[in-house]
Image (cartoon, rainbow, N blue to C red; front, top):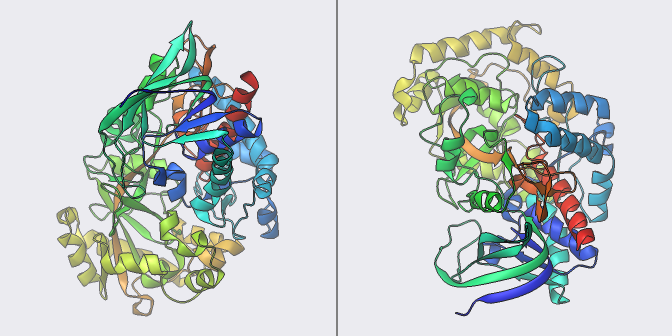
Length: 554
């Protein structure tokens, strides 16, 4: 096959959410766009398509209707207390964080509403913290679920790109893998790479890397939107920071295999600078998918706050490492136990009220915008259909009528021999004794009662406090939890126009970076930790900035 050669105003490498936003912004400014990706066209939308569609807003109408008093000052206090910026390289990430907070308070919601997005009226409370006012975590609920979940977020940008394609203003090239950025006189002038063999792989599944040709694209501006490293477990382990303990020998994958980090080195070779590569975001509530799409496919439980969290030996996790409170604090603690797994122990009364699974495909009611299914799955008795499927078929789930039977089932799973049965009994019985009074010294139970003061938690996310071992609340459930890889918090350093910066801090002419490849902005606007609902938001914000700046520059 002869080499393919194209010329365009703006080249976008990667068609995840940040790439789609950048492309549509450049198109709206009247520029011609070529967008390339190594996957088949069915994967248009990238990781965002699989997401729950959570977005971070500050002082939104949804918050105000629920009686939540949020403000820019409170959001900034939470963001900077969570991020923990402490490096010289954090100059641009700090600036991005300030700019993003302003975006989340003012323009973001109206901009998305104009594109047809709407949001579930109950605001979620993720990353609750549990420390002091200036410590990590969200002081108030800020997690707004998009009606339509991830596909709903992707849809308006995909539609705009495909309309431009029909008009001849945009070219979409699947199965084009970039191997080099072309450089002339110090400026990036486009990219070259391999044309891969056509693939009939389904969305998210592994596709071949057989090259059948080459291509070269010349562009006035080139935008790297290639994502992070979460599908490349060896790279995750190589970058694993000492502060999070030892890297797990066994992990499940929260993202498809194509999230491999390969473009980071390509961008660096062209003069860009990657920073904060040791900052990463992985979950500790991962379960193996009973119906996997990609290799080692894991699903994250989005837990309410009631489950008892035990380490592999049966010891209860310390305050405030309760479900949904501090993701990386819990990860660091568990990595120092010497085991790759931990346990939730709960009642059926808790699972039917509190268990939600991350991902568009695990939430057919919200993804399909099905109000009848939403009411039956979220408010009716019993677990939702996707959760019940894991109870019935998930290899990490143990469901039993008595505590002795439950412990035996836990010990029969791989790694269960580490479990101290007497310790499990002691922890659960002691916890249940604290339920007898409305006051307690058990901090988790006190937090449950506090959480139910928020209408959203009381309605759909937090079960009424009860004895887990009460037969009327049963059966008993144990869930074996794994580390689930997800996001890179560092990336290519950029200024507020998403221009990639070189080692000397000046922009690399012609080169931009967005989304996870840029640490969601600046090379890591989250710092060490994130507040949730901010990953998609960072893709939206950085992609918008790059598309507008690139269009103005060519």
